[in-house]
Length: 394
Image (cartoon, rainbow, N blue to C red; front, top):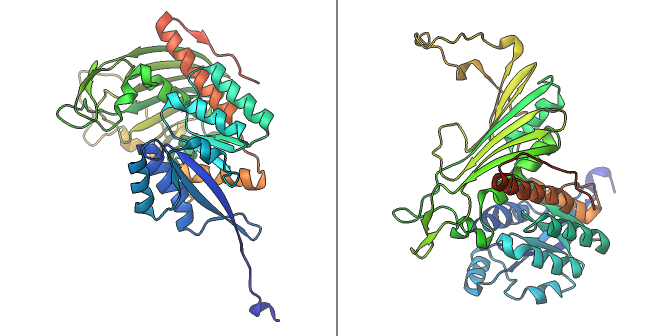
């Protein structure tokens, strides 16, 4: 047979994934539809060795009617309200968790004990001790484990990482982050986030939600967080739930944090669900260094090199010159690559880790660092003082 007549045979290998919590907004949109089902739509995940990995989701949750509706909508056949039975199924390879925070640690513990590889949203547990216990159990059981750290895969932050790695900033001096938007109270307009997010007794609160994100963003791009000073607030104390009933918001809906970083840089990040957006994207980070500065959002990233830095002079008595705009003095960083959905990109890396054992460091120990920072942030706010952030280890 001549070379032109040779046929390439591709082996399809199925990985069965129990997906718990996909009836929720994030679990459904980002993890089921835009990640796992998107991988199926592209024909599976090419492992590069003649094998295609085919993800087969098994939907898990508490609401039978919601699971059935999702399965029918997407042509899926497997769903269950019995988590224990799913975990007892030897054909299930991976357990994924996107439940409410308060239910996550127990389910992960069961999955690890059942010998399943685990991939999970964050925070991984209610406190550092619980998060470290999960990491220890996973290591002892010998299962592969990963934690969603999606913002590292955003196009804007990938461009920012490119600048850091290329030495664009010189010495990094500071990082300033702004995140948030107005979440409607639920009375005259429906809230765009679940009501449990605003009840501390159900695991809600912007610190436990967002500080784990800020930990890995700061850690991966600029250095380990070594200290935290935080102030929190519940700016909107009364909200209305999905049934239209009023409830007391017991969780913080805004947090103002200052983080010391290894190497001496200082980061300030404001997080709020009670702020109206006056910026280009819902999250933005400004990084200032001796050689240049950058502002990165979800997708875009703009830079100003020291050689192109203007020399403004403070004069409140005179308006800016006609046509002068500080924003126009920055240069857009080109894409230079095709950026896939960030959640899907990390799913692909984790599944390659499961299938091939490729290195993967966004694990349960990394997740524990995020839980630690949230825990210390709340304690800093309660005690009104700066706290050191010790390194975590098993």
